[in-house]
Image (cartoon, rainbow, N blue to C red):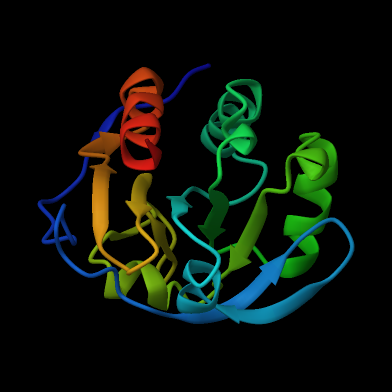
Length: 173
């Protein structure tokens, strides 16, 4: 693929030990969607919150294929994504990527307000007024405290999946 690596500006995102900002957005699975808050998901236990580029972009496809293949759904953990894509786009993406059997769900945030609240918003080159979340992962315990964080410093970038797996195993041990 031919693309430029872009350095992203500094961010003041939440870090380990801090409270994860709560939000409510449509949460999509392969059948339907409904407004759901992060705190409601935390009522069932830890959450792996994965911010990603819009559906169909190669980074989103690569990221979700990797998470699916590493069997993150085997943990006592709710895995959810969040992007600017609409619920309709998410439903198609879930089906196309074969993640419907994993139980992974995707939050829809076309206004990108959640990324702003996490200070991980970035403007897309050449698209005036359009932004999306930079790639980021937050492992949040049932009390809402962040136990692991990874936030991209350049685009495209991906988390170290082995480190992420180790963090999940450590957090849930």
